[in-house]
Length: 255
Image (cartoon, rainbow, N blue to C red; front, side):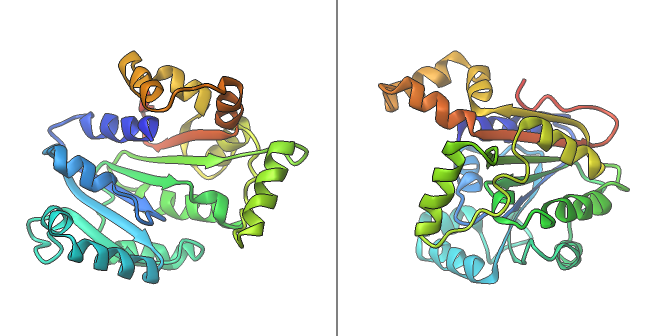
């Protein structure tokens, strides 16, 4: 997703003389690290940690090891020279997650970007602020700064789009308990503030798409001709990009 990738590269470009850490929570089978490494990782990236259930981590490691191309990029057997780490943990138990991060170890004194891409929607509503507060407690006392970046679907309780989404996902055995818990950008910003994160920002994906460079939008539109523009806008209205900071200065991740 171009907007999300842009936020990551913007973070890595900040103060290039300082090392940076990326913590991807609920990473699943995401390939962002491999795309960046294939393009040449910024020298500032010192650590990239992906966290998910043990079963997912084991499957991902097996996939990486079966692929010579991926294995050479990840260098799983050479942690002293590779920044890439795979870690098993359950995000629903925030205290245990923090214990796991201490063992990696993730240094709260190093600028860190925490990624939650389509993750919080699958947590219970009470687990989302618990996770954000726990992360704030771990990284907040450090010299940082630390930023959290999320991307999620969202919907009002009476919104037909959201009700249909829940019905369709449930028919496939997928629950999204927090879809309507934080139904707007304002709700996301209030969530971040209440959990100790400063300078909260939130854009729906129509707004985020408009901020992409013209050449990126043209590439997308060549790849996927937008015949149904209204459907495109309706879909993007129901997905939001949000972020907040632990530190004294806001971060312009989207420019």
